[in-house]
Length: 404
Ligand code: CTP
Ligand code: MN
Ligand code: MN
Image 1: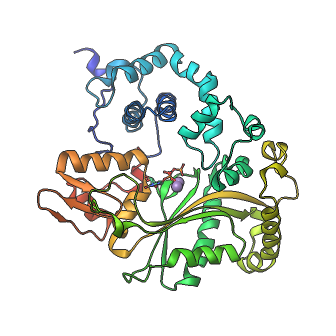
Image 2 (image 1 turned 90 degrees about the vertical axis):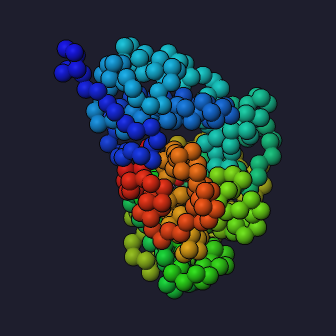
Image 3 (image 1 turned 120 degrees about the vertical axis):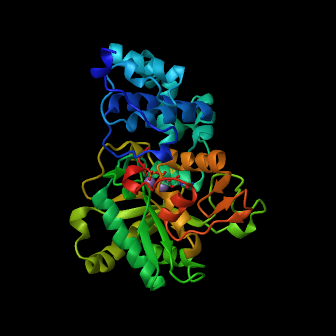
């Protein structure tokens, strides 16, 4: 064929966990478009459609060069009619009407603004929109009841919607490390999530904490949280205790994809770079400041006392020397550490694909706690991520290549 010499044909395996997906994406325009449709579907409670668009975007992220013609896509997995139509429109007209009209739609804009509040999911946002609430101002005026997470989310709206940098993640890593070794010497802290995959920014900072001696990690989270709180590092925290032993359906077959580790969803008060300086300075001088601010915010509990302007600040007041950052802490016993590490490194689609591969191709059940072999009726142990990939019959994919 004449064209075969000219057109680069692509070929990729069908599960994202069989592919290497770096951050070097050659098809950003296409994957942004498909990701937006995925996000819209997820926000509209259409998870099936959402996954389909996510899978299509992930295939394009794995390609070694930009797509220039539809003919290059022949034989690629996960590209359904709808995704192909969107890709074709963009290749031919530089834009997809569907993507553009979704982006401009009042409903999508409102869903984005409202779910941008920490603690607000698509169901809550949808309920508010049906009550005529489309923005933060209308939410403020509505008198809608907010839970503690949502109050904190609204209070720190601008900070939490600004990407966290790697430098900020590193600063928070130091703080978490100091907290953890202070309350349990020998305990280990690992950065997970997007930053472990090599991303330079993220929406939060994720940590996994363990201790090399099984059982020593029990009760660790409340101590870490108490240390952080007493040093003035926490603006908000909600700790959920470990419920793993309570599950009736067995660790291999969790009733949902949610794991059951002791976890803490928090909002850190991070000193601005010029204020951080030497650790000693942070922990002595800053503490008094923090305690004062903390006390102040306690008296501010009543939402009515906040003015609407307070949430709409485009720039923080010049005197403010800190910013709010979302931080997730998870504690795992060492026996489950490899599974927890694999499960918390992401990406979300990569995790989903790993579980789908395990179930559909290997008759195994993978969770962030364990791997269960349904044919052998036993758990497969693993001390490293490499061993888990091997159990699953997959080539090892390092974190930097899990950016599906
Ligand atoms: N995760 C999870 N259970 C949750 C929330 C998250 O197992 N309730 C896992 C996700 O599957 C993901 C990892 O934790 O693998 C990190 O999640 P998240 O912070 O939401 O995503 P990131 O990939 O870190 O992206 P970002 O940089 O935007 O934070
Ligand atoms: Mn993250
Ligand atoms: Mn997270």
